[in-house]
Image (cartoon, rainbow, N blue to C red; front, top):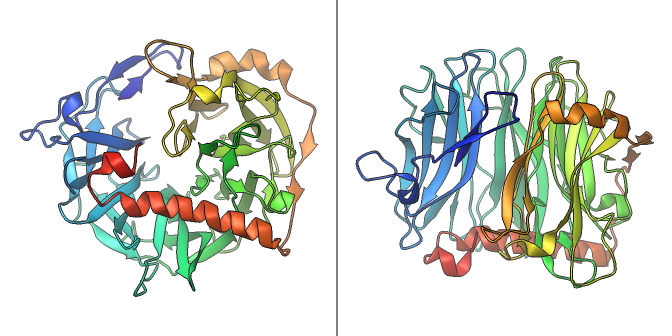
Length: 438
């Protein structure tokens, strides 16, 4: 589905994207798939919206990346264009799309293409004529293979610097000597994606995952996926879940930044306001004046009751990446009501846009409703302005440099990566519904 608003987000209409059979997809219009997932949308400088979908079938091994466009602000959408379609034991997964803010002719799509041995390189396609045609997809980063298990990328996402340089962020999960390791990396392109640089490592990923603190029930979050934003001056910011700040006890929200186009990165700092509780699934954006905004969920208001899992969504703002002020976006809501998809599940990632002067969060939360356990919400700037009075007292982000992680924490980091890779490794093996319930 796609939601569109013409009054700053105060009211919305909804349109199905024709990327699956249940939303009008057919063999004639190119959307003849049983399921659609992992949606992403991006606006070009001329106002054209581009949406991308992972579309696939539960009943066989067919998966595809489909792009559709809207020239009327999301009121209507074109028939999809197929970037890639595989009918073998390969899954095209976790895509994103980026319209170039410096040149309306260019739009970039990137995803991982994973086989049933866990090998998942980054693939890329682009249009240079405003979406009329797309280049043949190709591999742009190879994480390497080995005889028993492959390495993979996850969460590929491109941002564009003011000089037109492309920066692709991804998590690389490597299988080394019988264990998994993860790190956040970027690759760069200065020629609209024709060629790409060698990878630059931002940081290791030391997430232990999220659980209900009372029952131990797994919460499926964005623990393997980072988010990236580019500022108007060319600075880059990346956020992700990480347990390094608590010596491996619980996940906080880590942020690292670069002032040289991604060539070097700062020591990660913890930007969630209450480090003593689990925080998860962060998103980041940058306002026109350079102010950073990060959203995330946490459990600070949870109680000792095993019957509910009280959860809030927060937004925190900073002008320097060190000093922060937080405000409440949504909650309390009961995360225990969420669907159980190998863990209580609101989504692997959430949306955070900006109208230039204010953040604009898009997010999922549970609801007490007969129509379903979760709904999609927007928190438009027109609603957030009165809440400026509710901004908390300032706090300073906590920096933690390299230090040893305990053997117990390392074990939990490894277990979290195994859970993540088992989900992605199983997806190319039908029937999907039995092995990977989204």
